[in-house]
Length: 168
Image (tube, rainbow, N blue to C red; front, side, top):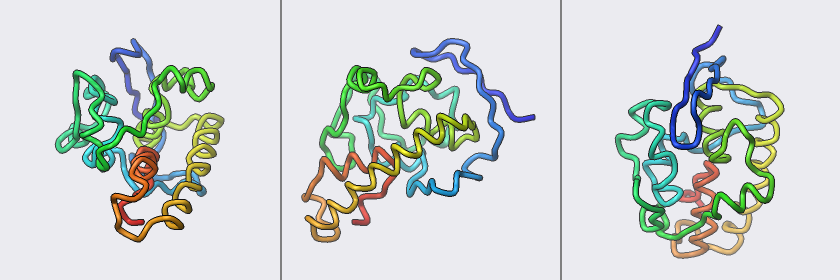
């Protein structure tokens, strides 16, 4: 029915998923990310380390302007130049990692954007995405619009969740 994707990267071997929706289309009605995965990678997220070994899985154009660092997490590559990430070990400890997406929310979002649907997991991740919205209100309340020096870590974290904090 859909397009099958076979994943062989550093964290998954022979993982197969099916894309049942067109890329970038037919999102859940309560899920409206402001940035695409391609835009996020080009802006600078996750210190450039995230998904450096996933080129076979995702469209090549996602990587054309991506700010990546294969060797280590480099916060200077982030749009706001700060580290706004927690180690993967923390995410695992808190139970935020779904077995099909061992890299976490952004990997889920990339695959969702590609057209993969897993109803229960999609609902869980969208609920987490909506919960991050509270940080938008905090930036708006405490910062002048366009003041990128204000709440940089919070703004960077919002970028990690596909909220375009450059517009706040």
